Amino acid sequence: MTVFILGAGVMQIPALSAARELGWKVAAADGNPAAPGAELCDKFFDVDLKDRPGLLAAAETARKTMGLDAVFTAGTDFSASAAWLADLLGLPGHSPEAALAASDKIIMRSLFEGASLPSPRFVECASAEEALASPKRRELDFPLVVKPADNMGARGCRLVRDEAELARAVAPALTLSRSGRAIVEEFVEGPEFSVDALVHDGKIEIRGFADRHIAFSPYFVELGHTMPSAAEGSVRERVLAVFEAGVRSLGLRHGAAKGDMKWSEVRGGPVIGEIAARLSGGYMSGWTYPYASGIDLTRDALVLAAGGEVEGPRIDRGWASAERAFISIPGRVASIDGLRAARCAPFVKDLFLRVSRGDEVVFPSNNVEKCGNAISQAPDRVTAALAAEEAARSVIVRLEAPGTATAAFLRGEGRERGFGGAEWPPSAFQVDAELEAAIEALPEGSLRPIGPSAPLFVEPLAAAEGCQSSDWSGRRLADSARRALEAGGGSFRSHGTDAPVPAVGRAFWKALVVGGVQGGLYVLDCVRKGAALP
Image (cartoon, rainbow, N blue to C red; front, side):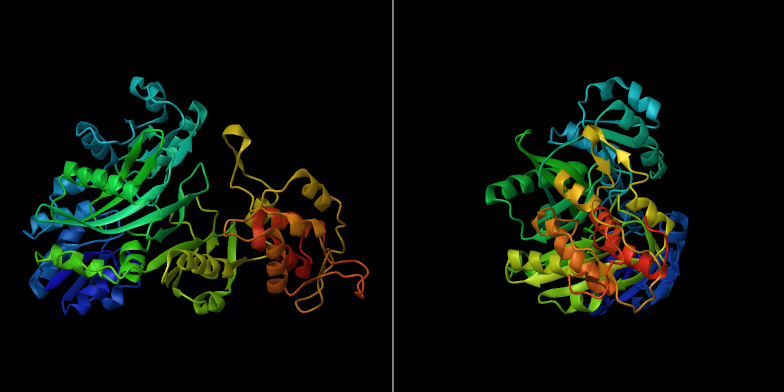
C-alpha cells in the first residue's frame, strides 16, 4: 500500500507515522522543504498545498514510481484538494462536491439551511459596503461573527457588535479568504465541542467528543480542549444527532468528518458551527483522543482512505486527556524557560513548541499565533486538565529587553476599544481601583544598570496577595510576581536588606498587571541593562 499525504507538518505526523507502522510506503507534499514530517516519507515533494496542478503532478509521479492506493490529509485546509486528487486518480474518498461543501462556509451554511438544521443564519459578502447594505444582513441581530468563507484555525474570525465594528472586520476576513469572500453570521453563545468521526458504508462512527476552551473576545482563540467532555449525556446525544445530520446533508460518505458544535440555551439545543471533511487538527485526533481512548483513530482513517474495512466500534479504555496552549505578549523571543519542568510534570505526555529564539511573537487573535501546547494523559478528567494547565504555566516565553513591541504593549498602546469599553488585547490581570492606587503609590527606585548577576530588589506589594484575578494561564498576581523574580534573579526588598532603595518598584507591578510574568520579567531585564522602562 502507498498513501499520498497532503502536508508534512506536526499535525500530519500521526498520519505519516501510522502509515509507516502499517508497513505502507509514504509520499507527502508540503510547501515547507524543512517540514518536520519530511524525514518520515519515502518520497517528499516540495509543493505548496494551494498548487493543485503541482499536487496532481506529484501524486502521478508517486503512482508511477511507488504505486498509489490512497490520498489523505488531516489538520489542513486542503481536504477538498485531497478529495479532488482521489477522484481524478480513481481512489476512495469523499466526493469532490461534498468535500468542497465541507470547506466553503457559504455552501455549507446553505446546505444546512436547506436541510432545516440548526445553524447560524448568514449572508455572504465581497466587501464591507456589501455587508453593510445587504437587506438579508439587516435581518440579523448583533452581535454577529465575520469569517473568511474558506479558511480554518479561526484566522480572520471576529465578533462584531455594531456596524462600525462590522465595517472594520470585513476587510481582514476577505484578505484571508482564498476566494475573496467573507461570511457574516449570527453569533451563537454557549459551550463548544469538537467531534471526530469516520463515515463509511452509510454509517457515521463517532471517534472523539471534547470540550473546547475559547478565549479572547472579540476573537476566537482555542486555548485547549479536554476529553471526555463534561457535558451531560443528554446534551452529548443531541449534539451528536445534529452533527450526524449535518454530515449527511453535506454528502460526506467515505472518509473522516470533523465538527465544531455548540450548545445554545437560547436556541434550545445544538447548533452546527462547522463540519470539515477530515480529521481534526489542534492535537485532538492524533494525540488526545488516542491517549484518552487507547484507539488509533488516524490508523483507521488511513485504512478507510485506502478502501479497506474499518473494524467496528472499539473498546474505549475510559481515560482522559487535555491540551492547553501557552501564549505570549508581543516581542521577540530571547529564550523559552521552564521546558524541563513542564515535560517532567506528572501525567504530561507531550510539549510542542511553535516558536523559537529570535522569532517575533504577538498576542494571539487566532489559533496559529499561539506559542506552544502541553498535552496530558491521566485516569480522570480533573487530573488530566490540571496536569496540562500546570505544564503550560511552567513555560515562560522570555522576550528580548529592551524591545519596541513589548514596551508598547506594556504601555497600553495599540489597544482596541471594543463594545462596552472592553479592550483587546486584554491585560493579564483585572485589578480594582484600590490595588491600582497601591501600585501607583510605590516608589520607582533606581534605574541605573546593575549587571547580569548583581542583587536585584523589587518593592513588595502586600495587597497583591489578596488579588483573586488570574492571568491567561491561571496564575494569580502574587504567584506571577514570585515567578518573574525567580526567573529574573531578583527578590523582594525586606526591612533588613542592605539596599536602602529597591532597584525597581512601580514599573515592575504595572508591567506584571498588563503582561503577566512576561511583563514583570521584561522590566527586570531592562533594569539590569539600564534600559528605559515601559
